[in-house]
Image (cartoon, rainbow, N blue to C red; front, side):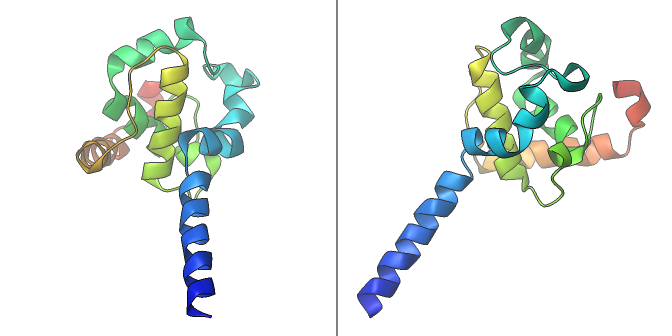
Amino acid sequence: MMRLAGLLLGWSVAWSACAASGEQVYREVCAVCHATKFDKAPQLGDRKAWAPLLKEGQHVVTAHAWVGARNMPPKGGKSDLELADFARAAAYMARAAGGKWKDPDAAMLAKMRAEADGHRHESHGNHK
């Protein structure tokens, strides 16, 4: 019985890691806009549309999108989405457009949180 519980726990952890991949989050949350040309969202793989975003930098773009910027709702419209999962999806989309963004480590997530906290205090009307 203990062995079965261990296998189930291992499967559960593996499933959670798989479900939180950048591609999976993109498909479940981001594709609603980023695969349908909704409200000028840059499309997956569109190098021209993503070029100015890539230049802004991974922690800046991810943090601003996380709290809501331009026409994007906070957290991509999924209120319970964790920053790490959101950031992996952003990195996935950036890589599809030729960017060299990596899935965030603890240091990058800390930079994103600090940027997001600062951005929350600014007027979002200037970022559309």
